[in-house]
Image (tube, rainbow, N blue to C red; front, side):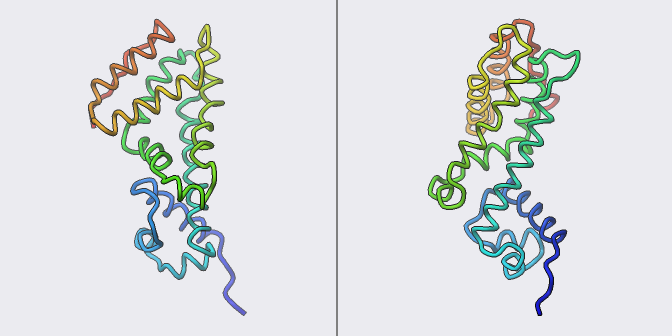
Length: 192
């Protein structure tokens, strides 16, 4: 009779693997996860079955973490214009911790996505739309959530390529003022 699985250990390992994947991308093999968690590849397989099952679990967990983060950032705040909420969310999303979510989901090679979780990137993108739609409904007339999402994602890609926070923040401010003339200027305490 073998040892009984311990769900708490598996959950902790999964959280650590997801954090590692967000910081470094999804690895090709198990060794980076073993090193990040301080365990062996054998123990990872014991808890998750196969490499691909672990990778799918990591993608699911990272997506859950992303949705929780987005839910907090994009929620309607009583007494605050939604354009101000978006300006604050923009700064948080473009800090290193926030960019890790977008980087992981956009850099997942298509062939890996197809084998691990077909449609993952599309779903990880469209997950934003209900969150944005709810907040954008407070702006008159409400802008398209798809348009706002496209601008955010495009500017994040621009920022990743250029690291020009000043220029990209100015562009996001101009966009916000296009959908809400009273939108605040994006204010970043320090450029990372």
